[in-house]
Image 1 (cartoon, rainbow, N blue to C red):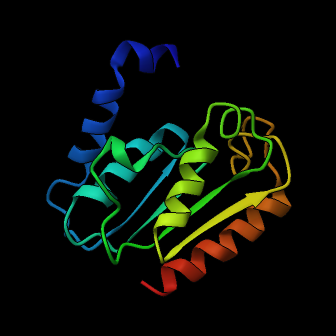
Image 2 (image 1 turned 180 degrees about the vertical axis):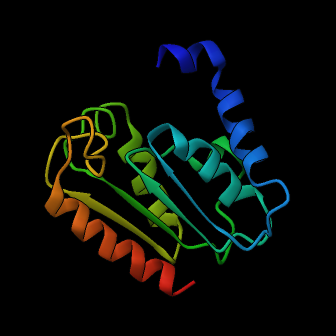
Length: 143
């Protein structure tokens, strides 16, 4: 986080936007933790988005516009006692988004790990990850 604070959150978002330059607009945008910032912004603001997958993080829709775009489905995945997702208010933004968007799903998995899908830092939860992958693949198959 020290590096990100030095770099700036705006730069993180801009790098995400630059990463899709030259790609078609009909994409599903996905981000994990801090990577949700550019993914959520692109899903909300780039015309033609096919969907969004947000993992371990969510910001209020108002960060990037007045409303979530119509016909852009979203899935949000996190653990129900993740101290970052729950403790820092992301869960409130996720619940608001899920309530406001017709094609939305908020999946809360039992546990307190941030990055529960990443096997490298020791926070990996194989059972939750398997269920999350099943849900994500179903989401993607419909797009």
